[in-house]
Amino acid sequence: MRKVLDPLTGNWRSIASIGTNMASYDAAVLNRKLLVKEGWLWPFYVSPRGQVYDPRTDNWENMAVGLREGWTGSSVVVYGHLFVVSELERMKLKVYDTETDSWDAIDGPPLPEQICKPFAVNACDCHIYVVGRNLHVAVGHISRLLPDENSDEKWSFSVRWHIIDAPESLSDLTPSSSQVLFA
Image (cartoon, rainbow, N blue to C red; front, side):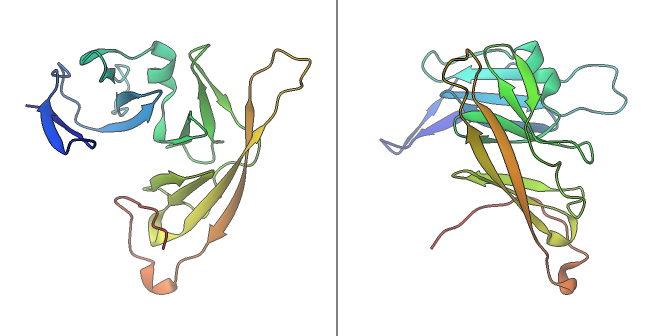
């Protein structure tokens, strides 16, 4: 049975079944909907499954094809847009365009080479935090670039990375998750 917590009332309630099992998945909340996407599994004979839950209707639906097939890594939401840090090495950060059901690489360099898989990803405000093997951290500052006022273009984004090297004593550790805490 699947349940969700209503943070306003503090009560748990049952929700509709997703209708499928996903062994390896990533999830994000975008536009007040829960996106759940199965990870790519070797061998790549079948595209991963993806489901979208709408809490207003208590209904699951299939994820759009472009969203599902382009979601190739760990996700975060910044500025109300879904970003993916790709599992493929040295790939640029990409952002999902809901209007065209496509992914665009953002301006700026790829994830720094010091950050190796496995990694954990989180975001706070306009920063993406990627914790990699040996617990090195890459902090990506996301800038939102205004379209030209005489243009029909959409928002675009850029990233600037800053590396925080971990102490040598942590060189045999790998992250399982990451959380951002502020005092």
